[in-house]
Image (cartoon, rainbow, N blue to C red):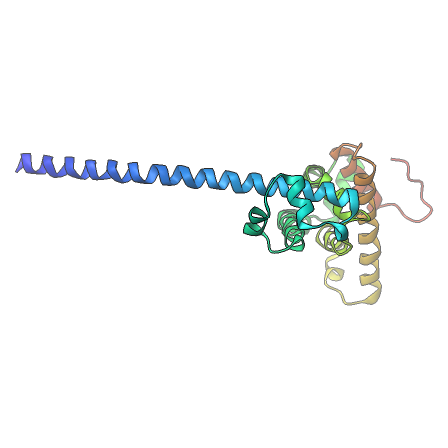
Length: 229
């Protein structure tokens, strides 16, 4: 019985090894394919950014993108149906990433924000937000520029700026349908988008920490008040 059990155990072990031997090349092939797809998409993203800056999205063709990326049309169409699909996929990727920051904004209270402003310390999640915007700076510069997508600015405003402004409102106003409250939020959200766009357009010279401080300070400046930091 002992010998038979040992034989069965050895047989099972051999089967496992054979299965692993079959799986390993398949896993390696998949990993290689995944890396190839990632490289292709990054090349197309880089090409799109460059072409939007050079001639504007409306004038860009799939042939332009493929030539710039060093890819054939078949590779492009394996991933996207049109140039719009590529642009929208990149925009949606940013919107998905910003969900985390939206959740952090909802946790902010006026009291905690005031503390950071008074102590002149940057709000941590705002620093992280500007770090992320810097990482996506080239794409944002292109898509928010004159040759980009005019629909993306409002999406960015609603995702980041509107949530930030609503976070500092008193609780009873956060879901208010009062026109004055809605206009207040819209006014400051658009102003905040302008701040982000100016930072990107001017080469993102200020650090993420400095931009976080500026963003917080602007929330508390009243018309006619000195803007000294």
